[in-house]
Length: 296
Length: 200
Image 1 (tube, rainbow over the protein chains, first blue to last red):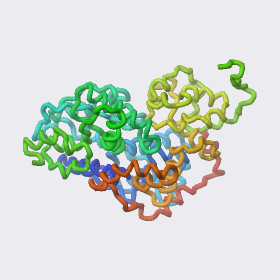
Image 2: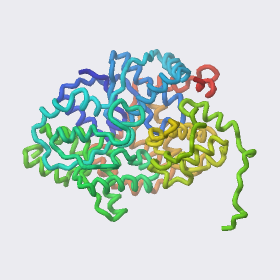
Image 3: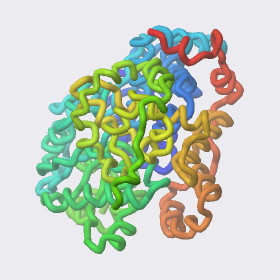
Image 4: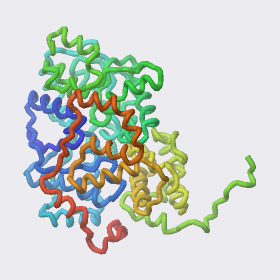
């Protein structure tokens, strides 16, 4: 299996662990990723607020670059990038006038947009293309007794998704079961974490994250698993501030789903970028994994 | 409260070109089929912090209450999670309408003062224009310097943690030739009118 790979800005910056763990997992499972050469920022949620044509054209540039490289499918580990790229593709197909303008502007830089590339989420590829059976075969250390709150965040399954459901997705839950862990009932799994509002309006975004962490804990989870680098940053890095602000211990280990897979596969925690997570140092899961010889 | 001082709005004072402009934007043409059921407001994680619910914004937009909508904080609190869009029984792309409103407010500089989201969006835009890629740390630093430098002190603890864990990249990432990015951004097309672009 070979895919065009779009890392995205977050994944190379604060969400570096996402990239590291994803690369470790695809190496293990034999998925080939070919980085799209000279990709640019997808625009995230901020860009569309300023100029619609530019937001679509710049996202489309990445799709055109993937086509140029001969890819038929492209993938990204970041849910924000996934949504933006997919949305762009839908807009270009749905609104020919928009599409023509985008194509024209790309042509000026010598790029041709044909629309032949499918945009896929990494999670979709791992669970549906590689398959849970193959994943099960790679599990060396089943995550027995680990109760997981699977947090999908908002961008993963909305509104142009091509896998799972809008309201109550189950992909990560099934993945957890395949890894030997136990998914808990988690109604806030697609509730927004505030996204970039954490930087602009922390009073509000911290409350959203507080609600998510609190629910996960009350449902009996000891690990919360996220997909998107921005969700992970919000859930993982602000726990100290949130606990001191709301005076309730909602501290919980927060991992990327790829990190959890890597632990079950017996991959070294440093390769998975676990040392970059703020909630890993004192995580009970860390001791549990050390007991079976992972990262001891 | 003295009920007689209540501000009464008149349809005659409204701007009929406002709903027309919004509806001409792709994805926003279904606005008129809104049944005011309130599902968008019910599922919105931000609506309890907004001065106006998304349902109200939808109604005010289609009747042309431009000033009220532009002055509201609702469009800036929208975190673009698309919950409203996927739940709307009339298939209205509420999130995309919020985007259209943001674009209009930025173009016309009609946003509430001191709103950090506007600064973030603009800085993001400039950074992509300059380099094609975004460095989150630079972006947050610029945002804080421009709005509230004291905020930087509060972030110091987190900043140190991120440096310690190698997540603080100071190297500004860039595409090979940012001029190409600017060429795409400066493309004007035929007439550069939004309406021409938007007609299906």
